[in-house]
Length: 103
Image (cartoon, rainbow, N blue to C red; front, top):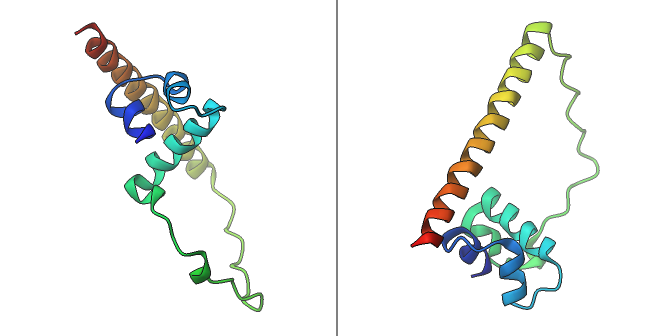
């Protein structure tokens, strides 16, 4: 409910934390990150008894080979594009929220 208020109703994280009596607004930030990563499933309670413990006898995966120069350049370009798109999305969302508040 708290996350939906921030995303759908364009309230700030701090406003929402105060409204719901959450002492640390960082808690709401953490919930937002979980929601963005896992969606609605992030807040479904799971039975902790069913969590399997990894077998220590399992051999870890071998390390990945080093990247070539071309792969490094491509990776850096993809990181730049990703950062740009994230900032663009944030600006669009901020503009959308501000137009909703004006109405």
